[in-house]
Structures are given as structure tokens and as C-alpha cells.
Length: 449
Ligand SMILES: NC(=O)C1=CN([C@@H]2O[C@H](COP(=O)(O)OP(=O)(O)OC[C@H]3O[C@@H](n4cnc5c(N)ncnc54)[C@H](OP(=O)(O)O)[C@@H]3O)[C@@H](O)[C@H]2O)C=CC1
Ligand SMILES: [Fe+3]
Image 1 (cartoon, rainbow, N blue to C red):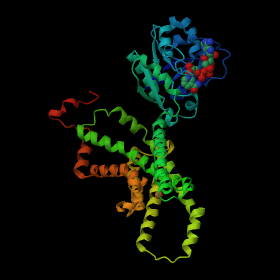
Image 2 (cartoon, protein in one colour):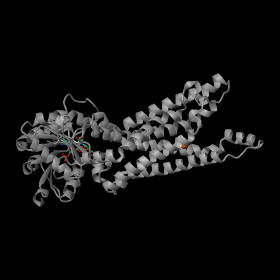
Image 3 (tube, rainbow, N blue to C red):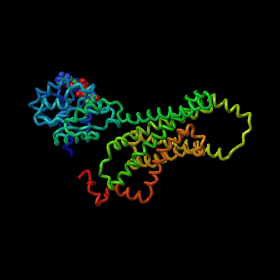
Image 4 (tube, helix red, strand yellow):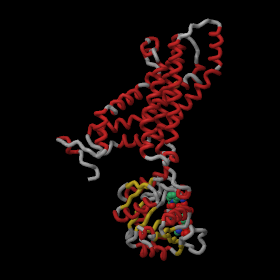
């Protein structure tokens, strides 16, 4: 492997990416030679690197990484004889979609038909290479038509500590080149869900609270929109989104139990859902935080102080049950929120990287389900005995918090079933690679076979 590590690589272009990539390659133990238009005046290069003309540099290495913008690819044709049989890595990106009829990588392949072009590294950035890869930029998409060429680049990326996702043949390059143009792709679905839920519950509660009071009781309580309504919508959205983090996990477990194997791929939508759990959870935490802030505000609200003043003139009977209920409701809520924050903190890359896999999965799964349990309990305590009271169901609709209890309750019940000893045992065996055989075992061949 020492021999491998001293392998010589060629980089065309001494720009931002060329320099950063070269520096990382040198740190990883490779030797680097740059091919440049002006080898004698190209500015500072990482220490240890050599620089020469494109032609000279290309002759020395088996892999050439082209860190030049596509607009300038025409110079490559002059180097074509030296690039015969070499692996050419195309790292380029576009500044917008659909700029060219064909992908940059396919264009490069058409310029140098005798080389094997591999598309890679376009999702890293000069910035992240220099500042240590952040969580989001650790993934590299790979595509190319020649298996050996792809394998060489895959090894390179792996040694740089990047995780590689194979996207197939070079025709997929177009799609790969568009990836970096997406802004916050993994946040898109969670943000849509959050916006949708917020809008739905806002209007639902607006009708049930404000419009109902206006129509049925001729009262104008529209001022409630600002705090009361907001402080109902936020916890509702938060709890639903938290339960949506744990729903795909139980669904995956049910699917594995049903199929009797773990070696079959989950449907795409489930994969996609699982991949955005962290973002779902962080947004849920944000909403929970808003709920906490709004709740702290309650005692200083004009409306609340006004009601308290009126009540002070009446004598009230102390009800121990109510005291127990409200105190448990607050306590469970606070504990739930504390665990919520803990979950959020452990999902930060710098923290999760410091944890072992066991520790991370303990926190995210065990404590995660406990958080969901506490927050759900908090909501049940809020409802308390109102569930059976007909007057709660204005215009035959349940209050928002009852609606929002559906998904978390389902998740918790399913999770409870999963930890039953018999179910847990089968699931444990499946996760260790055991497969159910039998008449229906036909379609359950391992994916890797
Ligand atoms: N910067 C980044 O973070 C990322 C960049 N990329 C891609 O990497 C490629 C390079 O980007 P970047 O390094 O930022 O760009 P720069 O403009 O910083 O560098 C480009 C380099 O290309 C060479 N070059 C410029 N014009 C010509 C020409 N007419 N003929 C031959 N060579 C030329 C020059 O090197 P010299 O003077 O030595 O010849 C120049 O330094 C692009 O395709 C970009 O899309 C991909 C991912 C991230
Ligand atoms: Fe609450």
C-alpha cells in the first residue's frame, strides 16, 4: 500500500480547485504534478508539487484530473496524443442548468475518445477541501463507462475520506453536474412538510377558534391569532414532525419482518424519507423551541393579566387533581424538550462524529422514542378529560391537538409491538443476516449476490 500511496497524479489547471485538491492529495501521500499553460508563473502551489506543461505532465501519470472550466476544454485536443489510454477525471460544474446540449464529461470524452473519462468530485468544493470536509460535502458521485477507470477514481476518492456513490455510465453525468446547483436539497422535503402542516393547522384552528366564536357567540377574539393560535400550531407541527422522524424506522422494520430478509432494497420513497430524518427532527426542534418561548410569554400577556385580575375578586376552590394534572403536564413537557435538545445536539456532525455507532444509535433511537413518548404524553395531559366531552368538538371537528396525536400514537404503538420479545428476536435475526426461506423465499435473494 506504500507503493500505492506514492502514486503520481496529474492535475490540469492551477486554479482554486486544482490547488486545494492537489494539497489534499499530497497530504494523503500521493505525488502531484500540475499541467499548466504557464508553468513558470502560475502562482503559489502546494509545497511538494511539481509543475510543467500540459503535455509533459500528462505523460507522467495514468490519471489526469482536469480542473479547468469547460469553456477552455479546447486546449485538451493538443494534448490528445499524451492522453491516450489514460483516465481523465472531469470535475466541472455548470453555473446554470441546460447551458450546453451535452454534459461537460461527455463533451470531454468526445474531444479525447482515446481516454476514459470519469465524472467525479464536482460536489466537493475548494473551500471544503481546505477546511476539512463538512458533512454535506463528503459525498462524491461517480459515473463513467469504463469499469477500471471508475475503480481507480473510486479508490482515490475513498483515500481522500470521501464517500462514493456510483451513478452508472457517463450518460448520467448531466444529472450529476446539476446536483451542486440545488440549494439545501435534503431540506426541501422537510421544509415542504413543515410549511404544509403549519398552513393547514393555522387555518383549521382559525376556523375552530376565531371564526367559530364570531359566528356562534358573536365574539371577536381575533387578537388570539398572534399568540394563542401560534402557540397551538407550533407544538402541533413539532410533534407531528418528530413522529415523522420515527415512522419510517418502524415501517422499515415491518417491511423487513414481512419480507423475512434485510437484503432487499426499500422503496425509493422510504429511502428518501429515511435520509431526511435529521432535517425533519431539527425543524421539529425549532418548532418546539418556539412553543417553549411562547409559553414563557403567557404570564405577561395583557389578556391573561386581565383575566387574573377579574378572577382575584372571586374565591376559588383548590382542586388537587387539577394541580397534579397541570404540574405533570409541565414537567413532562420540560423533560421532553430537554431530550429533544439533546437529540438535536447529537445530530450535529461535530458531536455525532465523536460518538461510536452504538452510542449514536442509542441516543437517536432509544432517547428519540422516549422523547416522542414524553411529548405525546404532554399532549394527552393537555387534553386530559376533554377527549370525551362533546362540547370540545366544535362544529363536529376535533381540536388540533387531538388530530396531531394520531401519528405519534400510531408510531408509539407500532414501536411497542416491535420491542415485544418475539418480534424483537425475529427482527434481530434478520438484521444479522438471517433470511426466511420457503416457498416465498424465491424473490428474496441477497442484493449483493
Ligand atoms: N472551485 C471549486 O470549489 C470547484 C470547482 N469545480 C470545477 O473545477 C473547474 C475549475 O474550477 P476553479 O479551480 O474554481 O477555476 P479557476 O478559474 O480558479 O481555475 C481554472 C484554471 O484553469 C486553467 N485555465 C484557465 N483558462 C484556461 C485556458 N484557456 N486553457 C487552459 N487552461 C485554462 C488555469 O490554470 P493554468 O493557468 O495553470 O493553466 C486556471 O487556474 C471548473 O470546471 C469548476 O466547475 C468543481 C467543484 C468545485
Ligand atoms: Fe406544550
